[in-house]
Amino acid sequence: MGKKKQVDDSIIPIDSAPSDPVHYVLADYNRYPVSKHRSCWIHVVGYLRASRKKITKQEAQRLRSLKLTAPCFLDNIPCRARSKRRVTRKKSIPKLKSKLDSGSFECYLETLWSRLPADKRDLFTRLDCQWFAWYRKASYREKVLSWVKRKEIFSTKYVLVPIVCWLVLSNITVVFNFSVNLISSFENRIFFRGHWSLLIFCHFGESLQSKTRTPCMLLLDSLQMSDALRLEADIRRFMFDIYKAEGRPENKQMIYQVPLLVPKVPQQRNGKECGNFVLYFINLFVKSAPENFNIDNYPYFMKNDWFNAEAVERFCERLHALACNFH
Image 1 (cartoon, helix red, strand yellow):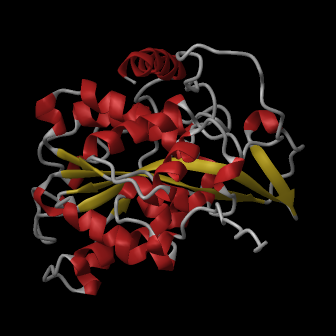
Image 2 (cartoon, helix red, strand yellow):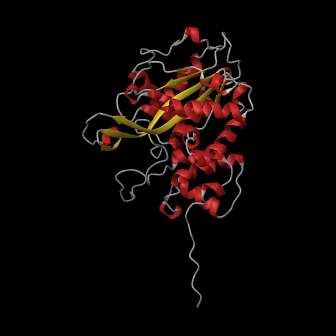
């Protein structure tokens, strides 16, 4: 008898995947075969890709909601055996009190966005929360820039860019503690898993010499000790490549002089709240942003007393309840 051909059930490499951003989410899971993912959204998407099934835009949107209702816990530490206990659909949605992964964040943001006033939403474009992280990887850079180009960000007043990146804090001595989501420490360096911040492009469609509608960038970070400007080099490169991909006339020197402003916003109290704060930043900024952002009036409402911790908690409770019904 002939030898049975071994089937490789690993996820299709990113370079051969379709250009739909839904499929590119799988890039972060290439290190695990699909068979390791059971009863989660990756298992479903992996099956669809293995069977070469085409999906509609509506089905793609439903796949996004699966990240929230059927999340993947393969990367969680420590690993445990699957629970045999049955849970209801509402309980299967991770609460905002826990650390948010990118899938949960996008689903909560989709819920939030649908509730914001339409006239305010019209002033904004938003990018996927993983695009900036993928842009930092040379192999995905061109693809990300092509997605951004389709968003036509130069025709809108504001662009929301949620950012999630590994964060390293130096010269701090702490005891290893899972409750604040610390992963490891080495030579006085602490690695926080997936820290969230919010980048906002303002008036990118205006002339860089404009005095009334000032092209600038805002970086809202709820963890001051993280040194928000650690990402400045990557942010400026990202901005320059966006201008270049659009064929804009501005030269590199002018583009690199666009102000990057870091307002002193309210701070999180532990290592899990950063994603919640970014969602709340988005909620308040969309509702309060002026039609014409003028750098002379900076920081506007973005100050230490912008809101308090209790307001964030109430917001998270309402948003979680809405997400349970929305999805």
